Image 1 (cartoon, rainbow, N blue to C red):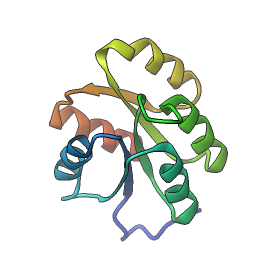
Image 2 (spheres, rainbow, N blue to C red):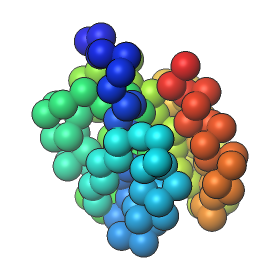
Image 3 (cartoon, one colour):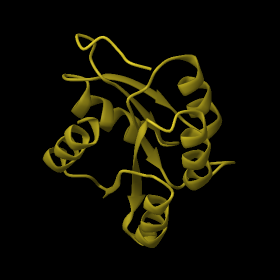
Length: 124
C-alpha cells in the first residue's frame, strides 16, 4: 500500500501504561501522526482499519504479549516496521523478536534523541 508522500507517517504506540503512551506521543507528535492503544487486540484492529507505517510495541502486554502481536502484525502487513519497547530485563526477548521481523528495540526509560533517530531509520 503506497501512501501520498505529503502525508505524515503514522506511528502506532502499543503500551498498557497510559503515561508511557503519553510520553511517546509528546516526543513524536511534532513530526508524526500518533495513534495509541493499550493492548494487542486493539493494535491489530488499528492496523486493519488504516495504514500504519511504524509500530512501537511494548513486549509486556495484557492477554497477548508483544511477540504474539508482532507475529500477527507481520502477518497482516509484512511491510509495517515494528520497534519493540522493552524493560532492560527482556532484552533477550527483544533479540528473539528481531528474528521474527522486528526492526529494532528501545529500552524504557527511553532517550528522546535515540528514539527519534531509531524511528527515522525505521521509516526510511
